[in-house]
Length: 598
Ligand code: C2E
Ligand code: CA
Ligand code: CA
Image (cartoon, rainbow, N blue to C red; front, side):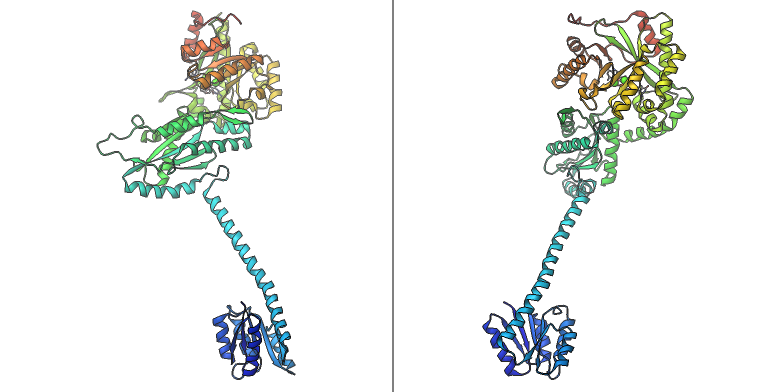
């Protein structure tokens, strides 16, 4: 019910108005003078004020200004009651902010009409404001919630982000500290993801990341927290903390610590992902640090987990590693290595090793893959996994790549001249080398200078190199083939697994990555995939080399499935030129299962 305050010193008039208002469902309050009126207005905050102009002590104008100057009452509709002929007063009142006036004597209808009109106008104005204000508040709350989400969650995967992970760490730590427990912190990095990103494009890479996030979530318990740290890195804090080792326990080292969850996570990620009907294979590397022994704040713990993760990557990925002091020292050495790379080139510290590729038809060596090694004066032989990425980053891969190419071609040429059985030489190309504008001409010039027939040189390219600029790459490959070189697709299966897509590039040989060859026929997924790859490749008239063959069962299966060639430790590791030469001279061969149907 609306409340109306009537300020009128003439009792008769006041009561008359109060009576009229009472009949129409208003709560009417009377005030006999201005002071009391102002007081009541502030206490009761009526919906409308009727006020006489002429009153002793505080008149109507005084009341009006007091009402308007108080924020609580400032917008209350205010109607002046005036005696006839006080026209100037009326104008004055309206100027000061009255909403309307009624000239006494007025009739019931006039009074109620004026009141209704004012109330309606006020409702329209301030009711609207109130609604608007509520709407604004609601959308502000929404914005605030969105902001909160944006600050604490990752937009792509909807997982918590680094900030939330940090905040939650302290809660988990307080709980764990009370129970004297250890908290494992995991950093998960997807192996070769930048390469996959380049191959499938950012949209599909995002969808892959979302699927990865879902799988991670499925592996975790309610008290564990998983966050996306950046592009292809995730962090996990295990809230279900483990008991802290007692004094008598041996200190934890990579050898005597294990974390079953880490293994589960690796296996979950290794299951094939599907993107538009294609299967994509991912592996991850996990680094683990533990509160409190590896740090008491989230910063050192995350840093150390990252160090352990990089170490796991360096060891080939698809594994987990606990943080140790020793790992950190070895990574420091990497930085020094980078600085030394240039000097290594100047001092001719790089040597080329050769790994035989064997025909599964004849068991004979048919080619050699040239694999570079760094003969470091202090550190000994350093594997390319350690310095090729650095060389790529620094651009040193260009002189280094050319050095390997020349050395390998010259070597094969010498073997030919010496009358040894002719073998092909396969050389790995890096993206930067292949992208050089005069790459083909340069290559043609090199073999001409060495006097090597281009058909003895095979160029190994990865999917990443091929799909950079499809049309241009196809042209370039055609040109290389026209010059007589052969092309093979290296590490097949580690990027975008669609052979139907890759077939548009004119290559001759497909090298199945060793991750697929591993453990066949025991590992049924690998077995099915390897089999399918061999069959598809043969349909496309491609030769197939299986990489990383290490065991007899692997070899037997590959022979049975008509794989053309193999390369792996089972026959030989990469060896020096002298050792390779000896193998060639001896006519070393492998016992293979003859396949009649070839
Ligand atoms: P890749 O091209 O896939 O070379 C095959 C790698 O697998 C070699 O490692 C080889 O030693 C290894 N391997 C061969 N058989 C087996 C096996 O049975 N079991 C296992 N576990 N491994 C086997 P490596 O020599 O360490 O080379 C690593 C990578 O470095 C190469 O991978 C290649 O991508 C790159 N690389 C090597 N030399 C060069 C080069 O001259 N230029 C460029 N751009 N990259 C190179
Ligand atoms: Ca290769
Ligand atoms: Ca390879």
